[in-house]
Image (cartoon, rainbow, N blue to C red; front, side, top):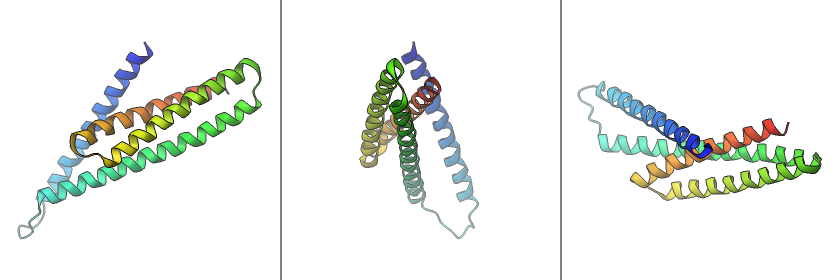
Length: 146
């Protein structure tokens, strides 16, 4: 049940991101068409610059998300040190799961940096979904182990 909800959530996020990306590129093309008639823009150059900026901004967002998650996991680790009994064991298991998810996300970001074209698009979607998933897992853990 959780996996199917996660898949639906991931598809919704990917779809939303695609819509936003398409609208941003469409708006940028409109802005280019307003240039004075003597100015010629190379659409391939501007498109490459836009993709590069997008790639850099996505990598930056993912790295910022990872940093935020690391801070929150450290807070959970401190809570685990103070906890006792079953709560401590459960929290330590959850922290281990979060650390594994974080390592997987870091590996995806590393692959993302060296990828291009369609592979980059696929990896980007996967990394963004993984980031959202781990954010939700951290939030759930924080709520459960207040």
